[in-house]
Image 1: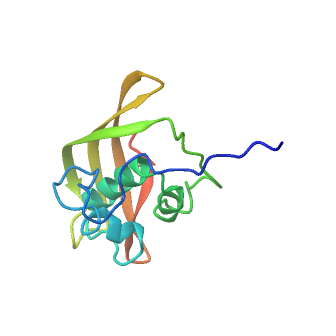
Image 2: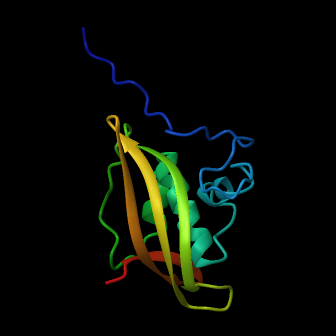
Length: 140
């Protein structure tokens, strides 16, 4: 008998009324969900960074690739469905506003995987590409 592969599930509830993983306290459908569905683009570097964190939380690899600068974007990414992204702490930002063309966001992303907790601390660089904010990579 052939083994069935279980369906890939989102690590976090993606119903429109569920709390958004980004931590802003809004419903997912009104917050990062609209970016993930392509109904809007993130207006600031910080909002893009928050939506990318949420994409990790809901296992949306396609969104992560779409919002990655073409010069630094990998050809594909594989998300670990066992990894659970639990909290985002934005520590600071420079630039990245409505009228800016580049910006940085420093954050701590908390996760657990296989029973172990971890934190990813990064200062990320974002730039506008064809008018939309995209992730360029870590600073330094």
